[in-house]
Amino acid sequence: MFKRHDWTILALILILSVIGLFTLLSTNIDIEGNIDLGGVFSRQVTFMLTGLVIYFLVSLANPTYLRYPQILVPVSLVIIAVLLYVVLAGPVINNVRRWIVIGGVQVQPSEFAKIIVIFTTAAIFTIRNHFDDLLLGILSFLPQIPILLLIYLEPHGSMTMITLLIWGILVITYMREQRRNILLFVLMFSATGSSLLLLNGTVGLGILFAIASVTILVLTSYRIEELRKLLIIVTIAGVIVGGALNFSWNDLLKDYQRERIETFFDPEGVDVDQSFNVEQSKVAIGSGGIWGKGFGSGSQSRLQYVPEHQTDFIFATYAEQFGLVGSMILIVLYALLILKGLLYAYKMSSQDIFSSMVIFGISIKLLIEVFINIGTNTGLIPATGIPLPLLSAGGTNIVVTFFSFGIIQSIISSSQEVFQHELLIDNEDLLI
Image (cartoon, rainbow, N blue to C red):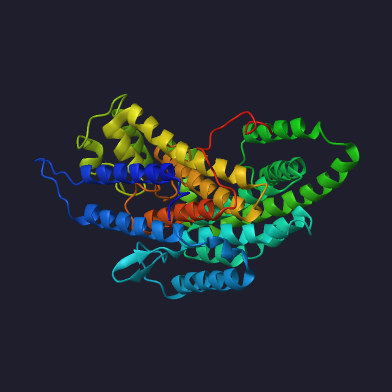
C-alpha cells in the first residue's frame, strides 16, 4: 500500500509539527513553572492528528483526476461559493470575515483556495503543446480573479498577494520562453516603479536604479527588433499598473494595511503601537543569543511582551528559547522539505507537466509562507499576519499543510516512474 511512499517527507513534517507543539507548550508554562496541557496545546494536538489522518487518506487517493474540467470546475465553484459566503455572511472575528465556523472550529477557506489556484493553473498548462505559453499564462489567470477578489474583500490583503505570487511564480517557471517572460516582468516592474515615482513621488531611487540595472543586464541578450515590441508593451502595461497601484494605495488599501507598510519603511516615524509587534519580536529573537534561553525560559513570550506569540510571531517565541542554532536547524528542516518537493517536480517535469506543476506549486507555497513569516518576525518585511506552517497555532493551516503533502505523496505513488532511490542532487540536476 505504501510501497513507494517517501517516508522522509512525512518525517520532516512530523518533526516540524512536534517542534511546533513543544513551542506552544512552552508558552503554557506559568511563572511558578506549572504546565497547562489544555487550551491551545490540546487543540493543536487534535489538529495535528487530524491532519495526519487526512495526509494518509489523501496519499492513497489519486488527485491527478483534478486535471479534468468535469471534476476541477465543480470543486473550484464550491471554493468560490464558500469564499463568497465568508465575505457576505461569515462571522466577524477581529473585525474581519475570514472564517467559517464548523462544530465550534474556525476554518479559513482561503487556505484551501491556494491549493485550487495551483490545480487550475496546472490543469490549463496541460494543453501547452497546442497554445502559446504567454496565452496560457493569461488564461490561467482568469479563474483566479474571483478567488483573489473575494479573499481581498474579506479583507485579507496579504493572503491575496501570497495567492497571486504562487500563481505568478508557477506560471513563469513553467513557461518555455523564460528569458523573454522574465524580461517582460523585469521591465514591467521597472516601468511600474517609474510610474509610481512620477505619480506619487514616494519610490526610492535606490530601488529604481537596482531594477534599471537588472533590466540593462537582461537587455544585452536581446535583439533590437525584439526590444522595440517588448518596450512598447511593457511600458504601457507598467504605466497602467503604476496608476492602479497608486489608486490602490490611496483608495483601496485599509488604514491598517497602509500602517503596516509605513511601519516597515519608517518604524521610527510612526506611532509606537504600530511598530510594537515587530520590535518586540526582534527583541525576543535577539535575547535568545546563540544557544537560546532554554525550553520554557522565554521571558518575552511567556510574559506576553510578544503579541500573537502563539500564531504570527511564533518564530520569535521559538528563537528566544533555542537561539541562533535552533533557528538554523528549523530553517534547514523547512529547506529540506521544500527541496524534496522541488526535486520531485523537476524529475517529473518531462513526463507529467500537471503533476510536476502541482508539486512545484505546493513547495513554493510553503517556501513563500515560511519566508514571509520569518521575514515578518525579523523585521525584513512588513507585518502580514501569515502563520508559520506546522508551527503556528491554528487548525486550518496545519491541516492544509498535511493535506498538501498528502497530495505530493499520492502523485509520487501513482507516478508511472518508480523512484528507486532517494532524490539527490547529481550533476544532471545541476544543468540548466
